[in-house]
Length: 484
Image (cartoon, rainbow, N blue to C red; front, side, top):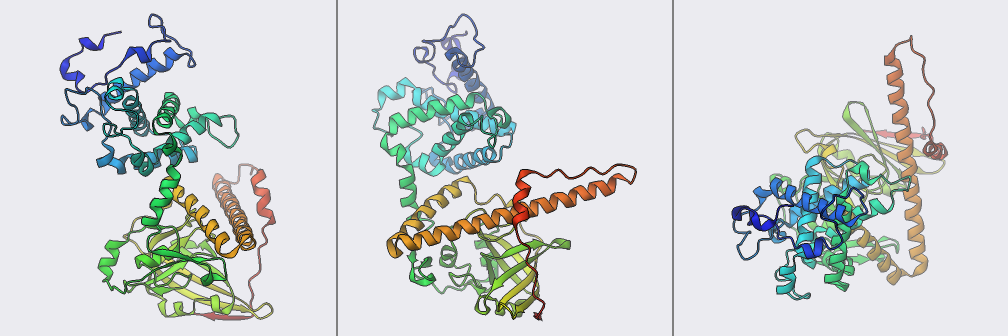
């Protein structure tokens, strides 16, 4: 192997300093190893990937970052590029969760980032100059990991390897991971050793950050919602902005933990599920519960059932007008976010109707919505919330449970949890049913397009389809109807 001391000095400024006393103590340098479990195999791959990453990413390294005193290759400066590291973490974690194969560019970026962060840990020159408790010369610190979710990224990569035998988990090779798994395990070990208890308290720090960021200026109120609690803004400032300013302020895909946070920011005029006009003067329709179905021509039909006071009568004046639509995770819709509340853009309210079942005194409201053109396509924001936002959501749910328990007791908390579990089961059944219906329609279209000369293959039911048969399809009452 070519010695690093014989390399050109101009190239050495951009290449890492390897220390063979750390890398090659257990590796046979004379013969190549093809056993993935052998130390020599992993370490040789690490060195190869490092130099490949250096050539691919040399454009990111400026002369200011590479100093003669330290010949290490620095990763993207976290202080200036934290958003890029967070974006990389979210992209990789999303692919792992969905079982999607990583693209070449994604795999190159991941390999480069992991290798450079590992190199930053094992560089004995930095370790000798800085004590273990000092983070001044280290690129990766606790606040950087906290913000970029790098600890979650490592855990997800390792989890793929540890659960390869599980039928619901993809194989590491299927998503494109190889030596990155061993690099992630080594990096996680180094961080746990260096940061000690701080590494295991990262979620605690993130929860504290929520109170000054996503949950700022809102408070939990158990009295406001039949004892189960809602989040209300501490103070709403009556500031009126023009429609143009509002459009610049919020874009489709803006996400909140709850409607109270959206009310605090002014996009809605109330912290409850009802149509309002926010401080920007445009009507806003939060779709937190109910169901939504797709109609021909790109339109959507929203259905809401309940008592008379739960119906949105003021929408009758908005027919033909544009309305901001926010969707919540409890909504039965293919466009609903998996958590929290998301702004999905401007819609035209095409129609409004109301029916009453006099036998049960249950009202059924239906509205037809059509998304306005010229906005970010809805399919481009369906991935929101991303993995980092879902991390905050898990912390938020734990916090909400604690607040309900503290203010209302264990009985009310149990009631709240049972209600949420029932809603989740109903949403899962609804999604399975719609997926099954969509599959049947697509199969029917393929069969009809194949011609009469071909034999139609019967639909093979999957185990997941059995649950959909248990969902009752209620008949619509025909007694009394109001249509706009």
